[in-house]
Length: 239
Image (cartoon, rainbow, N blue to C red; front, side, top):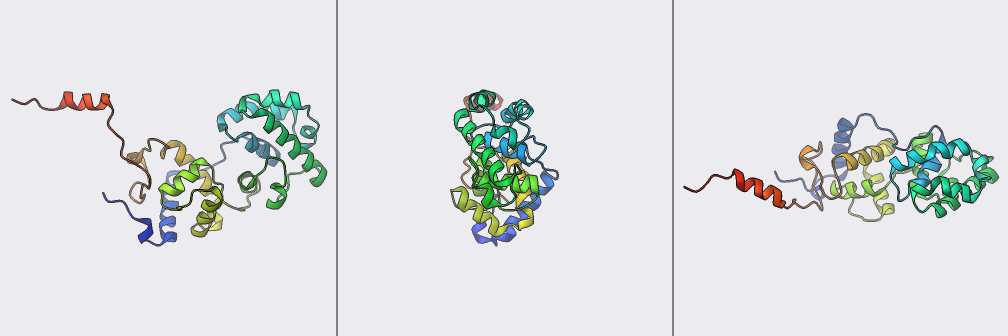
């Protein structure tokens, strides 16, 4: 079947079809990082850089037991903090960021995680993506679209963006997706990227978006030696 060319259709109509397909496939979505409040989500998101959500979720229970809020975290011993988060990788840099974040939250915001994008990105270790995660998931504020590695990959494959940087991809997605959908769009694309639209071997035949996806950048999988041998064994003999 010939795949649709997003360039020949209205971008907003194409995005609407993608959204509808994602909603059918993932009607209920939630953040994969386990948290109970904005502070915990912010800490977990900082730790998730270059680390899996599963590993972060194994690390944070003890971290939150020791440092249940920004006030306690701001007073943490750097060496003890590093040891607690060592398994998440880049633990020294992350510990510095966590301390800087907590100290600024205490000094500038009385220990409460701010609800404004400009205040969040002024915190240690907090970029636009992390700020969007916290505002969207913890506060329900659609400040932007979270563009992680999954969203970046799928936005191109699905024909929603031709750009390669998270900043430009976010702008493209905001242009074709209603603001009320920004928060859940990220969650759904991330789930789809983890379950179906894998980086190296996307499961196109099992994809709910297969009929509308232009499959940009997807190449047909080459048959493995095992598959080739199986086909040969099943082929009829010449007689």
